[in-house]
Image 1 (cartoon, rainbow, N blue to C red):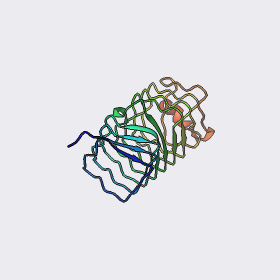
Image 2 (image 1 turned 135 degrees about the vertical axis):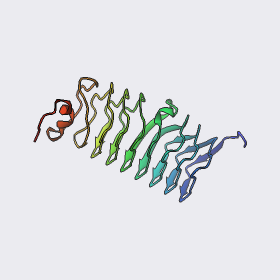
Image 3 (image 1 turned 180 degrees about the vertical axis):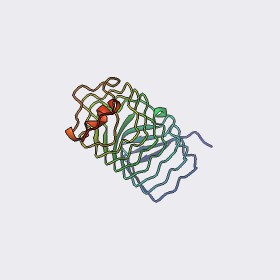
Image 4 (image 1 turned 120 degrees about the vertical axis):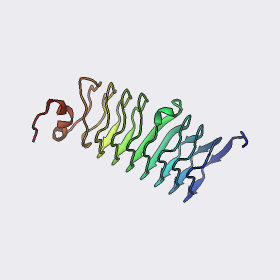
Length: 192
């Protein structure tokens, strides 16, 4: 295996199955991945800057040291990804209509991140900085929020969340009057 870096700029990759493959020493700039499969792929150390993933499956891919800068995911499956292992220097995303269930963002910085129509079941946002992030029409069933920074985060259309205001920073976070039960769950109130 060579250590030479392979650069890709403004290319489109369509219907490619990278499952269980080792893809290292690659840098992608402004590329689009359409209906590609990266299930259990070894992506260690790769760079994805200003890349778009559409209808791709990256479930349980190994993303240690991977740089995601302004990465956009649309209609993707990202089950069980450990985002804590990514390169924190190039770490920004937008997620639209994605499934991120069982993924881990513990301690990461995700300020101004958009999650729209996403399934975020059993995801770990503990100690994550989600300042000014938006959770539009997202399912947060059993998602963990502990010592999480949620200042100005928007949960107005999110559902199934359980967030304890005593253990999270939530100054000016936005909620709908219809979903306040997610903030009061520990009190076991009967809210109708």
